[in-house]
Image (cartoon, rainbow over all chains, first blue to last red; front, side, top):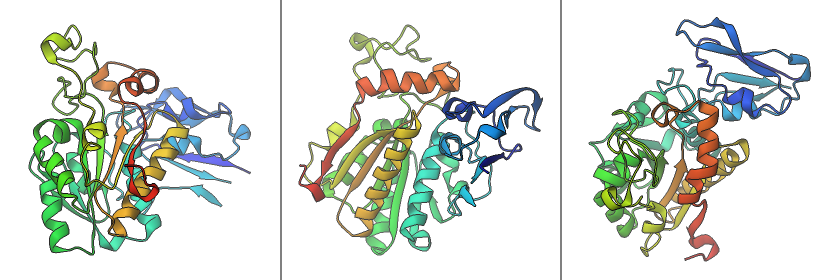
Amino acid sequence: MAGITVDEKICKGCGLCANACPKKVISISEHRMNQNGYFIAEAVNPQNCIGCAFCAIMCPDCAIVVER
Amino acid sequence: MKVFQKTKMLTDAHLHYCPGCTHGIVHRLVAESIEELGLQEKSIGIAPVGCAVFAYDYFNCDMQEAAHGRAPAVATGIKRCLPDRLVFVYQGDGDLASIGMAETVHAAARGEKITIIFINNSIYGMTGGQMAPTTLIGQKATTCQNGRDPAVNGYPIRVCELLATLDAPYYIERVSTHDVKHVLAAKKAIKKALQFQAEGRGYTFVEVLVSCPTNWHMRPVDALRFMGEECTKTFPLGVFRDKSEGKQ
């Protein structure tokens, strides 16, 4: 079962992961924010994740761990 | 099984870059390449002045800060004293192509056995978005508010092409970070450059196009699109010199 874990403390909500995801697994939250005031990325459709790691490759802050 | 996690070559410090700035991607690519080559204990990095000034906090190896633009000169000294080390320089466009142009060109002309990672975001990021030598024609900056006009501000400098006129450089390539495919290609280029240096072959130079959503006044995703569509027109991607394949 593939899946991602976003480190919410260091996510800056830039959305590059959501843009890169071919399965639309990730989206930037509209109401949850972290201690820095950034709206964070979250897996909204985790069941669709194929573990391609495109999100992690595009994440500038190394905030995503991908498992498969 | 973890298929992707942060490399140990990067420290746990949180990057200070703006959201969506692809500087962080390039940090990771350099760090992963060094780790994969197994040269972490032998690496010495030179941090520039500019957005990447705190690079010494992020790389988990010996780092040295240099005066503005003088990183290739510092790297020359370190590499000549410690020739068995892997010396890499991480510089932005204001640092490398403007104030440090003399050091850059002469280090290349001497063929110092160092690796330069040149981050080209076509603007001065840290100081607030002034025009850089690499700003595109028509691109707005705080010091050319109606867009860069060649009659007043001149034309952007293409550093890869400029250095490719010299005889000494061993490997020169320009890569981009605007999508997954190009990030993977960038990783390959950076690793190749570091490997050539580790083998003692000569001066290696990799230019990486990076976005600056804050100073381009764009959303991060739009900045990547702009980079892929516009920046790559002015700065065509490709290999400009690779002596290992006989490309002069």
